[in-house]
Image 1 (cartoon, one colour):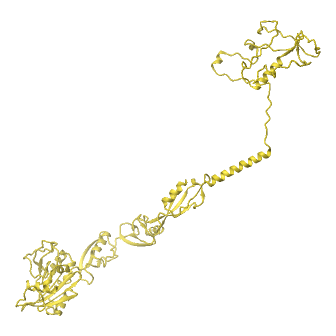
Image 2 (cartoon, rainbow, N blue to C red; image 1 turned 90 degrees about the horizontal axis):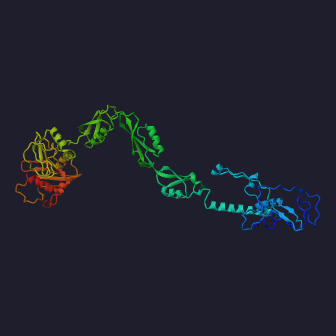
Image 3 (cartoon, rainbow, N blue to C red; image 1 turned 180 degrees about the vertical axis):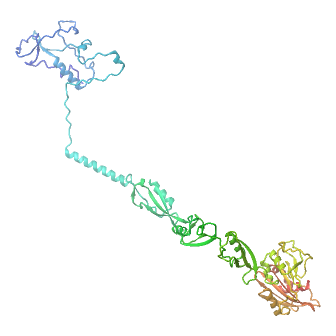
Length: 569
């Protein structure tokens, strides 16, 4: 920035004077320039008593122009304003001696002169303690705005088109890269729930799962909403439909029809009803099988147990123990009476009150049960189906009393004989082929629970079956029929028997036959010494005879039984 003493701020005095210029009244005209009659004469200004004057009062007051280094930095606008002010204040004078005109600059005012300045306001000491608002002084000079260069209209249009194309390309690229506008739902149908959820959440989708009960394909994604391949807003989330097992709903306490509807809705179509005595209202579901919450498939049978008033359930043709358990579960009790019947032993053949009749809670039902006891005392295989206590009770009812009694130390089975008034003898022993008896004792060891390892029955003349005394196969079969034996295997006589000892001179006469029936082996012996004939039947588990060394008896059970019975008596 140039200083005020530069040529662009000082008027050019070398040119001819302006005839219209204002001149001081006390100035003299220049010799070579006529005075302008129209010039305005300024009155000589009154001297300022407070003005600072030069030392030489005769010297023309001039203004010292400071150097560029001494000037403060000012703007071009400030320079123009200052130049205009100086030009207005300057007065052109002509030296009387005809010298070149000089610029007379008004004297520089000091601080005292500033008191007359309308824009100066002396500082008040109190105001120096706080910031004062700035005073805006309007500039007397307005600078002209710089004219800007404008682009051609076609260039502006072209620039707009380029910018729009670039913006569109960037938008298309970022959209294709799924940086905005949602994400494409991946193909998750057929995946497991865990894998599908992980794939969707990796893309920012919130996942909701709906389970659809089915019979197979459990934990597999069946459907997806929105569908795979669709661009969707991640914040809206995705719903997966996943196959799940069918489970039994809780229908306890509901009425039958409501329970059926709930089961069908869960996918159960094979529904069966059973009834149980209960104090609950009739028709109330007491339980369901399979249990609540257990899985099932639609083809499974679901059973509802429904409440009914106390009624005798159908116990006929059940085993007596099963019938007792059923009555107990129905809140009833049982009393058993054994009766003769052609049905299998221990089978319920009747009930009183009858099946289906209503009774009070806790009532006792009389059960008629096919007897477990032998139909006759010589029905030997029946003894193995009864408990020792039942056999003891049966023998007592048939008039048998214990005459010999003992218990085997090994195994705890009974070695006892029971005799009736006619002379029939029932022996309970682990060796029923032996005719010997234990020590005489009247203790009923069967009543105390001693087990039954085998049975032997000696017929009296009063009880021998018809034709049972014939020492022939016919006699054997007659006894077999009476005892309920079947499956004759072999017979032997005194002429064909094989035995370890020498044949005695008084060889007894006999016929012996044996057979197997189920898990048991039986034998019949008819004969004896001269003048006496006995009829004996016996039975034992087949394992008993399998443990005997039969090599000395020709390998035949029949010979072993006959020799033991006849020669060890």
